[in-house]
Length: 281
Image (cartoon, rainbow, N blue to C red):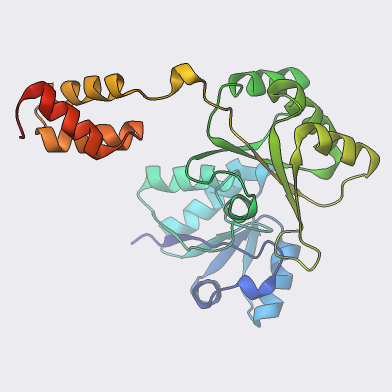
């Protein structure tokens, strides 16, 4: 019987974020697949654990993935860890998860520290809908193409960025979205000198142009503002109700769903729909 691959988050700064379940899982697995075994060894020493480890990182996903999979298929259990945060999210661990899924190996995700969610929560920007864009490409043309595709994106956007590329990225973001677009720049999250700078793209580019950035950054960027033409109208809501009714929904269910989709007031939408249809169901 095949073993189980556990996706085990590691602290993004504060060792106090290690949950009992994280510690127990690391203690119970047969071996650990680590992004950097030296970093993971420090964590294991902190927990008083000793475990066999092998390297699994971006440049050995082929051989490393097969090595992990063969041991899993032989019945061993494995904890996949990164240097910080949740594995398989903007991380080569996604390839190992896909490999396990194709091979019928169970994968269990252990909840825990995640930089993108932590940054979003403290950003001061809209958190209801967001899109995670990870690291932008190093190639300037590819970066700008990516940002061009996001010009009309209305959800809050989250990016990861290294300090040596931050200034260029802020310039590209300001050019693509406009210097007045709001941004929250988060660094050293959960650490002693955690910093959250809430400003605009133009001001951020100017600030870090004069103050060289240090540490890894999570950039939380405000989505594009909707236009008046895009705002939901009552007529549009009623049209949606009619379409849902045609699909077989009752009037009440159609109104409920249309209100949820458009943000229109359910009671007003229902009253207008009843007046238009002359029915209540």
